[in-house]
Image (cartoon, rainbow, N blue to C red; front, side, top):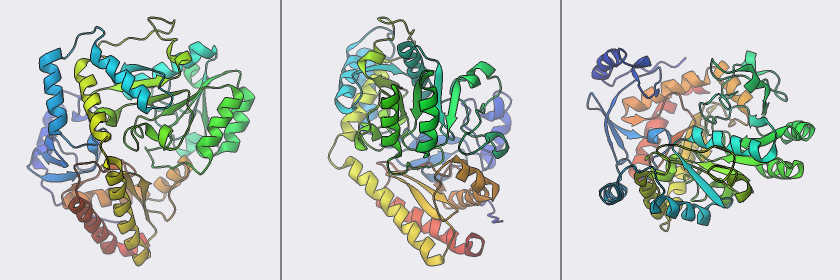
Length: 446
């Protein structure tokens, strides 16, 4: 196994961890923690993080995905300050900015006849399920193994089961991600293997009269699993033929890969879609969008209850409108995609040269390093990877990068994010550090 000693001084963070653990579980009040090389962030600006010990890192965690412009983006922050001074932070009443935002979302998102604004991805997905059940009168929800759709009981299911728990590949077990989930919730959830259209067709056609909706991530970004050609389009056609609403979870893919999400870029016809993260560059907002017949079931006009004290607040609405304005500028996405392509290609060239059992994979501005030759096609590939030590190799790689002033989250091998504040020099430095790791540990990676 690869051993990489920690060379970065994290003594102040470690001492602070002891203090913080007195006041919150695991020393992290926000739940964002990991086992290896924990550090506390002092500040973030542009493409950099600084920790309590004064270490500076090129950041690829991007606040767990939302940062697409850069930390503390000056133009965006100024728009927010202006909104605070002229409109206020919180009114809990209808206001012009949130209406302007929903009008803009209709322009750029194919299925967004109407939009309801929320605060987090979990909120939007719970409302999507509620609307689907209200509209169809059915109760069961279909999701795909390995896909993550928030922390709430109804969908915190089979995103990370062990091999012993998971059942067969073609007919996965329904496994709760957390304690405290009622058995009735599991009974009303169907888990299917991602990228297996035959298995999806058999189950959905058989139980279509009980299924309220099918929820899918266009890319299973928690593990970097890309759809096989035709899978999403086949799933869309299947849902249409069975009269089952299709819900796209674009919390990560939306705004990061295209202004209208992969729904627009890949021409997928969804009934509802949810967005968050990159839509406001880190300001707190999410959105559930969809066809009018579904969104009109929400209160106050419909029977499906919808509320939230901070929903659509002026600060978040202003941040989203300004972020969209910046994302619409010519060449924005082309540059992000080009940086991602450059990084992946350069690392893969080194992998080929060294004859390693690895691949640098991902899509657009998201990249990961996977220590097998073929990228994963489903969650079972991830389980095999973990069982054969793949994640331990990535943790060694993450420590090597930390030693070189580059932060990739050790627990998220497939979710390293490029964003507009990154430069060509950052990409080259990242490639150089990665290649150095591959060369140093060539014998362990063949």
